[in-house]
Amino acid sequence: MDIILPKFCVGCNRKDCFFCDDCFSMIDISPYRYCCCAHPTRLSLDQSCSKCAHRSLDRIYSASSLEDKFAKKLIYETRSHFQIKELCLPISAMILTHLKYIDFEFDESMMFIPVPIHKKEERVRGFSQSKEIVRIISNTIPMPCSFDNLVRIRDSGDIKGCFSVNTPDTIKDKIILLIDDVFMTGSTMEECAKVLKDNGAKSVYGITALRKPPERLT
Ligand SMILES: [Zn+2]
Ligand SMILES: [Zn+2]
Image (cartoon, rainbow, N blue to C red; front, side, top):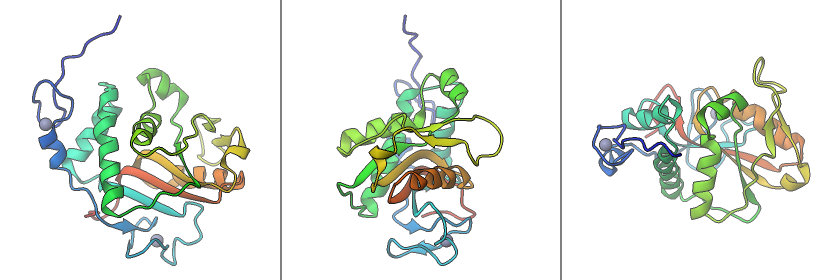
């Protein structure tokens, strides 16, 4: 039996929706590109700054900042006890809007891969937000997706050695668009990018809804 939750906006408590258009319009979506550094440099083109050129993660695109009140509510309610899968729709809309603002060009060598969450977390929540975001985005942008290829082989301890690729042939010479909800320190994405490249991926671009920078991303 499906349990029907009473719908209310997590941004303003308005009834009959999980995140209303008014709250979505309050989110500052960045029209800029930044490098992967903890103190990011705004980039005019898709290049790296000299400090982060050595990383496995080639680029990061984040729609908004963790300092954005409405975006933060949206993301954290999805992660909280509410477990509302429908909130992945506005999260995906944030990402798609950002990619449009920066004129992101998709090409046929690209492939979406979600960052795998902890198995226990997925079991408790009933879904993985990164997988759900990939599903939604790929409905708008018909690109190949690879689910359950990049996997988490360990849930605890050092992030190094936590990930593995099941079928390296699938990602060979591909540009991987690695999807997650939040880019915090970047260590998870960096480790995923390293494993993907060790298994034949040509480049890895991270794409997230939020980023934790010391400054705003707008
Ligand atoms: Zn609202
Ligand atoms: Zn940098």
